[in-house]
Structure formats: C-alpha cells, structure tokens
Length: 143
Image (tube, rainbow, N blue to C red; front, side, top):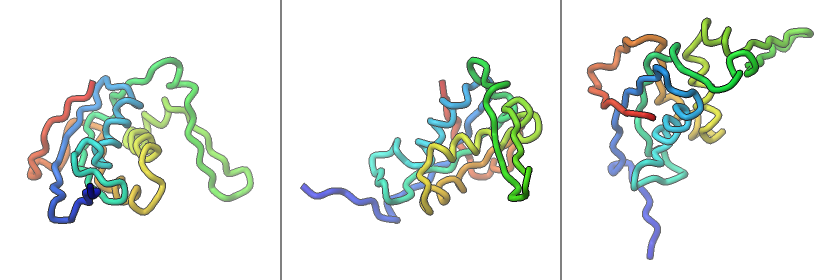
C-alpha cells in the first residue's frame, strides 16, 4: 500500500468565519489551528499546507476560565536594559484583542516556515464587520 501525498491541484481552499463571542480562548484557538493546518481534511499531509482560510470576528468578546484575565501575562522585550514589558490578559484584550487570538493560535501551529505560512491564512477582527464577504465564507460553529 502506498502513502497518499496531496498534490497542489487536489487542495481546495475554503473560507470559514468563526464568531468568537462568548467562546473560550483555548478551545477556539485549538479548533482554528486545526482548520488552518488542514487536519480536518482527508488529504492532510504534515509537510504541506492543506488547510483553509479562517476569519475570526468578535475577538474582543472572548471568555477565559478561572483567573486568567488577571494572572495570564504576555511578555515582550525591547532589547534595551530594563526594557521588559509585562501585561496581563485583561489589558491586552482592551488594547489589541486580535493579538490574543493570533498569539494563542500561533502557539498551536508548527514553528517552521510552513507554520508561518499557515498563520497568514488567519484574519482576526475585534468587531462583527470584516471585509471578506466576497469570498463567501461558511459559518463554522465551535462549541
């Protein structure tokens, strides 16, 4: 028996729109990462980008469990002495809600060129509106 390897002509991209309102951050990110990778398809190949495009709307209205709003932190460093910036999830959600979802999904994708290519297929918007109506995205229900 031979292993099936997907060819470029066999891969068909679909657009999905996900409403993040009242969804738990980790569960949402896990499902989105799976779709971006293409793991929900029969033709999945770990060395190829077989995934679909995903639009996430209402990113500012996600939920978390426990005390994550005050205890989960995001760090960045400016490369200057004393340049460590630490912010908790609550402040980052107010400033850049798109970053929170993008960061969570990026952590679940491969840390390679292929993973970076997959992350480019993710579009996150803080509100209801998005400019991708012409792609006719399908509604994706996430529990």
